[in-house]
Image (cartoon, rainbow, N blue to C red; front, side):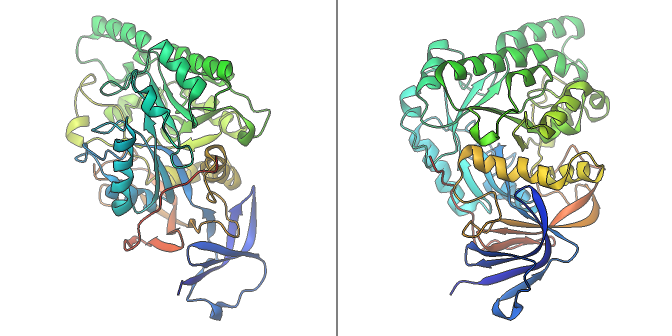
Length: 447
């Protein structure tokens, strides 16, 4: 017999509003959204008191690197999904640049098999693209995977796709949404040579946005947008980092009706180039964190719906790997545990309201990826829910759940945190404790 749970007397943030009421869960699904109706707690196996708390749909993170298979010294599907759940992320979409890379249908399915037994959160995996695996990509079932990932910029192994004929075929014939990492490799090489000439092999980390420059980003993003317009492709450009790129996108129609959508990541909204002197390798990401003007423009684009989604690009490396000179330190850092709390700091500062955060982190990812029955608090939807409470906590190595054991936010005090995370009707995380008997489910897509 399935369990029935009532979350009562809570402020529900959903469908662009905040209402007061209760939500009933039966088994894996939301049974009812009761509004202000008094619910009989005796009819439920468990009643969760929501007074003074907020209830959100589970966060859907459309860009993570959980490092499994092959790179599990950095993180894995269990450890990083555990950190995600503690941060209110109930579903993730993971990238193909693992080892081996997910560039065949068999290798892709092997990642799903791993996740089935290891991931605490719901999961999907992108199909990876190379210059010579187009036939494999075109076999992809769009109902079973989140999308096709194209690295139109430097990547690991042979995943840089720079063959114009290959790109045209993919943009013309892709069976699913195309997600792109956009940085122009030629521009990056020229900038790198210039920096090496000026600084040698140990430049300051502040050169990162000079090497992976705004020009490099725009050249690649504009090419992706051009190809998408030419072929009427469904394109999603990941981790925008510059003000100039925003001119490629529209805010005149709802996100769900756009052919070309855009994502911003937490680190590009939180940091700017004045932070390199203090944070150094901790904020070395690709694309680079850039000027304050870029950060401010990106935030405004979130508010005015030019940018459609907020995600993490969670990409852990070990401290041993990161604590290196500039050219030796890899790019990327962990963020899934702290993404929602960082956005809630912006809410505390009056920069964004709660319904907008939920729109960008829950509703719109579900809409533009056509995720089946997730991303909203609605009757009949999967019961992926997050109960938030205000309880200040300083980020330290003692309360970090990432396998890599560090965060670029160490020392920051974050005031809101998930008190409880429910996935498919199961309480998976509550007040610092994890309940791991049930694993997440494979995401399905209405395409």
